[in-house]
Image (cartoon, rainbow, N blue to C red; front, side):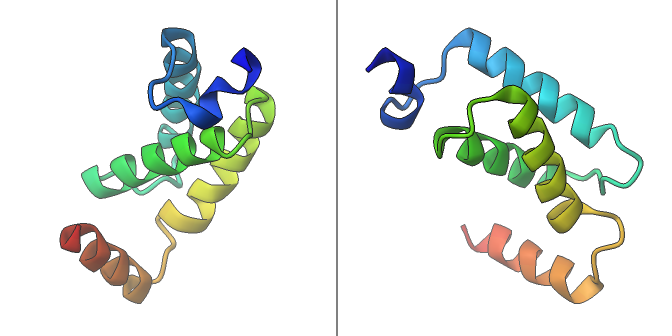
Length: 92
């Protein structure tokens, strides 16, 4: 069961946080990433959600995380989508 603790426990282990942080830092440093507080927080949540859904291989997690960020947090995102995301973010 220890192997699947990320699916059932609410707390990540320090080494898991370190690995997630490294992926996060690399992705948000990309020139296409629209760097603002909302996007950083939303991307962090998406990355953790991917990990908790079972994507535990960090090479795959990095690739999926980057693709998610390109699709959702790119500077090229249409303004209508950006406004809709900001409204959802503020409604929480």
